[in-house]
Length: 331
Image 1 (cartoon, helix red, strand yellow):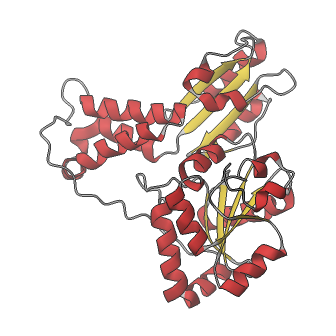
Image 2 (cartoon, rainbow, N blue to C red; image 1 turned 60 degrees about the vertical axis):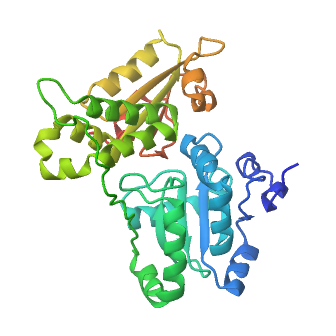
């Protein structure tokens, strides 16, 4: 039997999903903040909910990983919150995320001082850096170093509303004789990269995204020298950096409300998107075999329901076709 952490005593289904994580999670409460104060460590706050797709991806890729968990347990006092159980906490720190990053969504990640002054905010964080997004293996050592060497700067930045960290993703390209420039037809490598980015978003398989990143890194020197000669690859890079919209519609495939939902999405030009239909009239919708996370996306009250995630950050679902463009940040 796996060792269980403090969340094993909680009632929230979302918290119980993390009870066997190697991360030493605490529920929200004075005990956790007092421990952080006594041990002089920052607090790592993670907020999500049970049907949040990218919450589950971050769980699988990061907090279930022994290497990441070891770093987290050494650097932080870690707190896990279910937004459906504690909406008042979620509301406060979602505003913090908006102020620090200009974005929001779940999973929500906040790093703060023991006296609850946030100095870092993010949503989904992968194990390792990808494109312009920092990974846990890079972030945690940076926070540790800053906590030890620049505590005064952190203290000042927290009230002022921003202490920004960015990933060092500059990597020397490999020397490979493969065509990347577009000719009469787009480069095969560029098309492959775009397909890998889309497959990664559609299936939540980070291996696809990693392969796409390796293509970009491999040819980065050539692209930098002559971006206009790599138009198709720039399209792929735009999709990878985002925003990229993952849309799942759970509803009867031939129902009027499902068609109306699709029509609303297609009304605007949104190139960086993947639309998945989970046909609720099927006992075992075929899409579940391709994108397993969709099995946790039910229709609400038998109506077509849209789930939207942007750059691995999920919004609450809606049954209102008129609200789709708002969820997609399109007017």
